Image 1 (cartoon, rainbow, N blue to C red):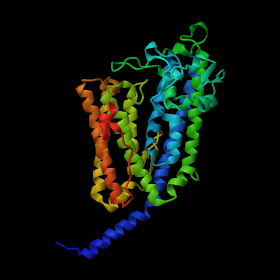
Image 2 (cartoon, rainbow, N blue to C red):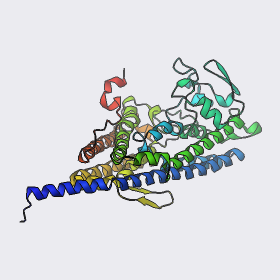
Image 3 (cartoon, rainbow, N blue to C red):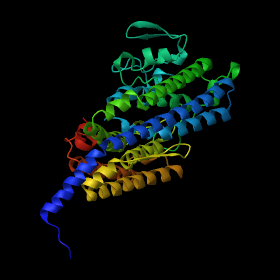
Length: 420
């Protein structure tokens, strides 16, 4: 058997580390290329959604409403894969609330069931119903809402009164306008808004169909403009690309911050464990459409995309290149192998939820108290996400980066606080 001197072994270690450092800029280019492709795919899908919305508002029918719903679901697939660019990129964090904020007090936007309640001390605008009112009051100020425009939604209604639950823009506002409230709790069924909510004349149900259509079109137009901005930010010469590639070590830390924070505090904690602890369907991410299983799945896939440096676009093209996995493999092959196994296990666990949901048992039904199968499915994914986060921590150490404080969640870190 050959033996290797300690000095020679050390030289291999140093060479491996130097090789990894020299490749960081290439890894960051792949990361930025995947971000650009993901946001561009989200933009393409949003434009398709806009066409479906225009068709619905222009010629309302059950078929047109279903087509708009299908376009919305398709639009979520690429967007959810971009959520991994949060937490490590301040540009994305400052922007993200406009397009994917949740949960929302839907009474701000349109009519709601009587069980929803009215204004509260925490949110005086919780039942403002902009669709039904051409003049509204916010913070004691009279607001002219006769014309429902993107500017009204973004400049006046979004987080009105500095209340985060006043979500007036983005995917979930559009989701509510397409599906309506899901009044089924943890029983079967999603929102069931009738297509006649967009009908004209005497066929209109629940009033103000023209204004409801105007709100839906304005929200979709704003989503497109927001995605245009973010796509440009990740293009060659864009602000987000320039910021993440300016410093190789900081850029690699940004990648790992996004992976760890999305996996742990955001997805395992706020989006999954918390809802299960409370047995509350209002805590599911796509609560009107019962699309949560897909949102969770594609969030997980986004994490794997950036680690492996490979993203499959909506037209089948593949964006790939040097990856964080390559860096970690050069520094600590066992750590890289472990992370890859963890990522695969997470996708298998999220895939199991997706399979059951697509067979007819929606994610909100899995949250029902006493549902052992649902709890096992959700906790299987939560545990896998936590495990993969520990792997990301080991990657930080293997690459000799400064320690990273990942986003946390009381549901994981201090469960008693959830019920206080």
